[in-house]
Length: 120
Image 1 (cartoon, rainbow, N blue to C red):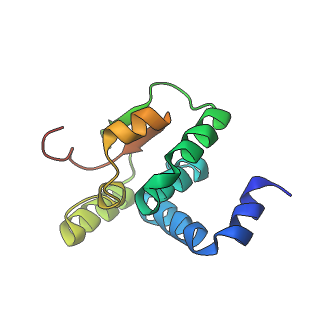
Image 2 (cartoon, helix red, strand yellow):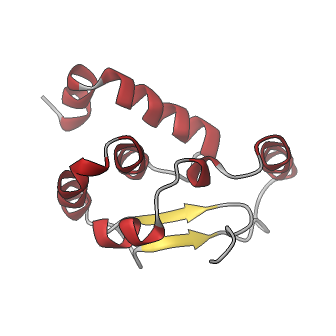
């Protein structure tokens, strides 16, 4: 049984939150990263498990939180993001309240959109 199917059987609510995060953030967020972020947000005591899963996935490039510039986006996607920020005040990833240091220590590379949070 593949890991994704096993996760659905063992933690269906977490998987639902993962897919909801992907839908809200956009297609640039891959499943493994979204799952790791949801797990860190909802169950911080599973940090070692997330770090091991991120190590097995072998992320590309620099780890940590990066912000995209949005210049290459379609007008529709740009409008969607602006509406989201106006309505919610922060991006879906920022709403998870996962510290950037946690992302770095877990070995995650996360590309977020929108303005950087205060102090970043």
